[in-house]
Length: 398
Image 1 (cartoon, helix red, strand yellow):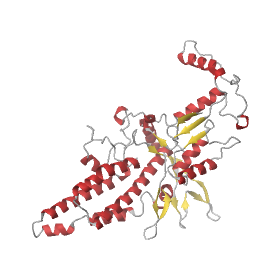
Image 2 (tube, helix red, strand yellow):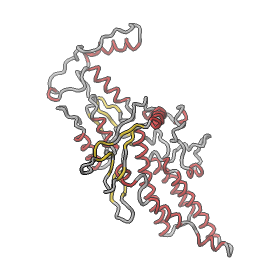
Image 3 (cartoon, one colour):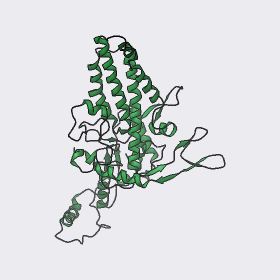
Image 4 (spheres, one colour):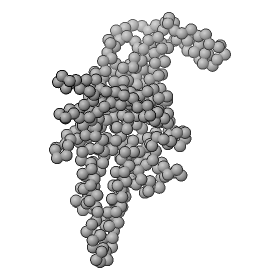
């Protein structure tokens, strides 16, 4: 068994698995014959070597051909980290070491708040640690949809996948804007400002006023940078390492109501970040593919035209945006994912993880997929994706 990293963005591992399959003349060993003694692979059907005898690659192919008699008759390829894509394969190459990573992609600029308050900023004004808005070797792309609180305002929220929420309610969680407005209003320090017009403020009042201004600036900048978010893990890291220490360093203590308002904002903002990150990842995979998505007059997801008799949904209306495709191709190249292959036509009702796992399982050269599951629910989702992939054909994949 050989384990290779591979996913729908990092496709080099999948290409290598196909090369292995081609070399052995078959993609996997028949389970029914797994107990039979191994025999050297047959030469039948293999390409003849007619290259220049002095060519390095031709020499390597000849060496491999000669070694076939000591190799097993087949090698199984298992793919690892199918839902995690690292720029340049996780080699640690930074954005400024590869031409084009910051050009025209809109992926490298951190939130304004983190730019102003964190000292780790390079000469180009880019925060070295990211802020949730950059992808690097320690903050890879997660090919995931997330579960968030969803539903119209005024009703009890239910948990829904980010792709389903987007189809019904758009890019923002329904509660985000009302909570943002309420929190900004709470920290407007209006009573202290009114008092400053008639008397000199006390030291404590001035400190409170400064603290409220700082919090409002932070919340404004977090909101302004929301659409630039690319990594939820990097965003959380910044909150823990920068935002939270700054809050505690600016106030000796927060009253219960103020602490509750901040907690409410960060909860809503976290859901909004998940929405943006999942949507950006989907756009990166779609390339230029576009599906018409909306909700019809009866509240049903409308992903295409509807038949006249009964209003049943028919095939999705799919188009391709050439300008978007060019932009995505540049981003693929900038992240070291190799040549852009045209994107994936992902059904809107598929979560990203479901689609990504099915794609890998449908690869003929892949014998198994190794998925890291942090909860029983994740394991069940992976099993459902395997069951739904329809790739059995008498040779079960693991």
